[in-house]
Amino acid sequence: MQHFADAYTYFWAVKIPALKDITLYEDDNLLVVNKPPFVSSLHEREGGEINMLNIARKAVADAQICHRLDKETSGCLIIAKNPETYRSVSMQFEHRKIKKVYHAVVDGTHVFNDLEIDLPILNLGNKNVSISKLEGKPAQTIFNSIKYFKHYTLIECQPITGRMHQIRIHLATQRASISGDDMYGGKPVFLSHLKRGYHLGKDQEELPIMKRFALHAKEVTFTLMNGESIKVEAPYPKDFATLVKLLEKNDA
Image: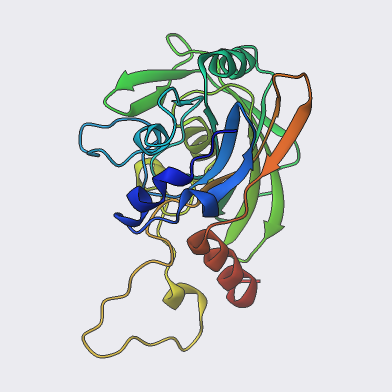
């Protein structure tokens, strides 16, 4: 069984937890990691060599990323150790056999009960997308509200398709932009907006509670090479957990 332990030091160079600390599941053919935020899934022009693909290939030469998460998005990411597994997982994604569940904190209070958004998405290039009923590709997402706050809502998002920025733009069409997602109208969350009597020290500049948009790939369910179905869940990273905790304490 080939493990990814050899890549530990590569992570420490950018102050990211060792792979052993973010591995959620591993067998002979693949592993699922809890991808940290601010690390690209694949190569990016401005991202240098720090991405999940290069990190994985430090340990396994044939490693391949089976799907991608936005750089700022944390959570479940499937990595194949060999071409056969990569093909198997890719086919499951292509035929929509893989269940993906995300959690998002959105601006405003919204009651979503199995709300299905079916709006085609057009990839404009350069990481930009738009809703286009004429030219876009089919995109469906199901939304459910999990927890309500005074000014925010914790939402469960289940994308049926896998278009770029799908969850983000679909939520924006419902006037429920993800907190901190300035590309789609989301506003950063500041503690001063939540906590009565909060005061900054002299000459201090307040930073948002999260330095990214509040989206986390919470779980993924897929089929192993032996036909067994498996569900993997990813705990919230520190910044997302802190945001939810502060909302529960100060915005309930």
